[in-house]
Amino acid sequence: MPTLVMTVNGATTQLEVAASDLLADVLRDRLGLTGTKIGCNEGECGACTVLVDDQAVLSCLYPALKAQGQQVETVEGLAANGKLHVLQHAFMEAGAVQCGFCTPGMLMSAKALLDENPQPSEPEIKEAISGNLCRCTGYYQIIRAIRMASEEGTP
Amino acid sequence: MWRDYLLPGSVEEALDLLSAYDGRARLIAGGTDVVPQLQEGSRQVEALVDVTRIPGLAAIAGGESAISLGAAVTYRQAIHSPVLQANAAVLVEAGRSVGSPQIRNVATLVGNVVNAMPAADAAIALFALGAELEIASPAGRRWVPIETLYIGPGQSRVDPTREMVSCVRFPALGENQGSAFVRLSRRKALALPVLNVAVVVALAGHAFAWGRIAIGPVAPQPFRAHGAEEAMRGMPADADSIRKVVEIAAGEAQPRSSLLRASREYRQQALRVLLHRALEAALVRAQCRTSVEE
Image (cartoon, rainbow over all chains, first blue to last red; front, side):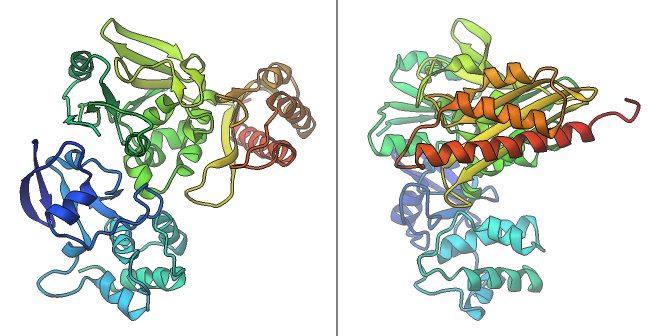
């Protein structure tokens, strides 16, 4: 079996994978990082969004070996030293979490946005989460949370 | 599912790998089309050969006369490229409407073309730009016009188990030229187009010198309205001419009823509106690029 070496949430990770494993399955089933959700499993819903080399990707469509040598960030990597990320705080404050299933993907899309553009406009926020579906339809609160986080500044 | 996943370091190495698997391996770039196809079993392969790590293949090279995009250039790169924004607005506008940010971060324009879907937004824009593709095979490299690539929906003449499209190139828009892309879909994001139209026009003084009009999905492959293009040569560049060109192009295109998209009657009406908007926008842009001396 091929060896996959990648950095996951800052830590170098090496494991044997099947060539046909997808990144979402490796993260969830092999590394226990079940924060990343699989919703539609066909690239429509965005629940499986993680960052690879700072860009939001759909881990359910992403061959694990494509991440060879890359930096992968999941929702588990957002909090640092026991402190929640400013986005996670803002999602709580704004009531942006309802059932919670879309939340990890929303957070990762929002992180990719704020890392690149710390002061996004509302259309830019909507654009950034246009590939993430929330079946509770809590978009208003999610957009507000991302705006609140951008006003506070990312730590 | 595939048993090997390979990351070659050059086009030649990728072709060698394809040869070694003798038809049982296929190329993958972003994988946003190929992975779902493999998962649902509509395609089967033994190995995937990923071209995205090949040095130089993710480059957008722009000269005064021609622009070229390597096979690993993603939609995200294309949308943010100052060269394309300045000299190929139609491609930037088409690229913006593809998928979602997560899809655009990994999906490639060339992959989309090779997949040969008649509605692919970037392919429609590349038709209007008069693009050519470089095909690399064990026999060498050759350039072919994009029109010759298509056999039918989802089928291109490029066999991704034996050869690869390494690059796409097209003339950069010059002075007196303008382009535009418009699209109708059921939602604003993550929706297939009901119709899409890409237009490039060139002016000579106050008349149309030439134009290219590409429409999807109204045929098994992206459609060029050759009759309308022929008719617009030399027409005065005004609203009356645009109305005439729209009627000819809409008459040629003949959209069909589709459960996924809309009825034939609706699409015929909507197509006129889209053609009108695209031609008007392209004309205004061409006029803005007209030099002051003229």
